[in-house]
Amino acid sequence: MNDNNIILKVEHLTKMFGIKKAAAREMLKKGMSKEEILKQIEVTVAVDDVSFEVERGKIFALIGLSGSGKSTVVRCLNMLQPPTSGKVYFEGNDIEKYSKDELRNYRRHKISMVFQSFGLMSHRDVLGNVAYGLEIRGIGKKEREEKAMEMISMVGLDGWENTHIDSLSGGMRQRVGIARALANDPDILLMDEPFSALDPLVRREMQFELLSIQENLNKTVVFITHDIDEAFKLGNTVAIMRDGKLIQTATPEEMSSNPADDYVRDFINSADKSQIYSVKNIMQTPSCMVHARNGANQALKQMRDNGVSSAYIVGDKLQFIGILTLEQALKVRSGELSMEDGMITGLPTTTPDTHISDLIPIAAEAPYPIAVVDEKNQLKGIVSKAAVLGSLI
Image 1 (tube, rainbow, N blue to C red):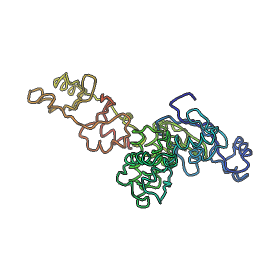
Image 2 (cartoon, rainbow, N blue to C red):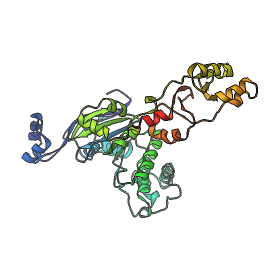
Image 3 (cartoon, rainbow, N blue to C red):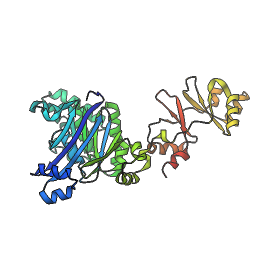
Image 4 (cartoon, rainbow, N blue to C red):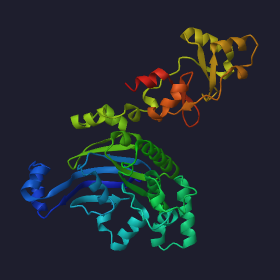
């Protein structure tokens, strides 16, 4: 538990509702189902021996159908529902051993929750709702409103701060809920199906908003959903639950390649493949890559040798510069154009970790295969329109 990258650790978490919990535990050991236990002794086994770790600064998506136990798990993470057995550790500390003051501090400063139903106060305006958590912490009005305005701006609600909640759309209300959670500057955001009540277009906007916020603030997010596409789009790690048990925990790509069982496989088969795979899964090494210093003659030779009509031009450290077509290369060789003027520059690029779904609109308009570059703009590969379309089948 000394791993600084692990901010939350859940060990053998079990949560039951009912009186005869000890009897229910014995029945579980004998392999009896949740339904049998409920019928015989009226104990509901909501969560059964769940363990996982959440990496700091990442999005952990917990997915399952209604009744799978995912929402109960997330409520154990902030002790809204104390576990029947098992442990939840925050930065190595067992939260069940917190004193009342420590637990209050944990909930106010370390972890915040965003609900599906928004949980906003209709008698307050946007600013009042976002500043509420800071107000109950005793932060002065000027300081809390400045912080609240910063968060309101971050979620794209500039100019709406004095608007009453009842006047907002569902998507705007959810933005207020996120801003309120962020205003407390928590280490962890717990999000229990926050976008499920929104229409598809607004939902996509909010998913993008969350990814942008997470990238800017580097927050840890535990995101609960029943939507496999949403889980794969948002989650760095995805965990699938069924009947209170955790079936598999993996990256979207690992889970897609090696599903733990038929249940997971069926879940994945219903997913939009473009949300699962990244550019690195479909990119290719360019057959014709030429250093700018080698000029048009070398570009023409490589085009001829590889049977292509364009070359990807890079600098001395493989930084992507542009594309030189066969026609332009001939003009450069004849002296009609300089190498610099002959290259097509300013082309769209992508990164290896970009989801294919995010590349589709770019690929649809791109006249050439798209260059894949890293954070230093070094050319790592190319992605053709055919490869993008082929990945969707």
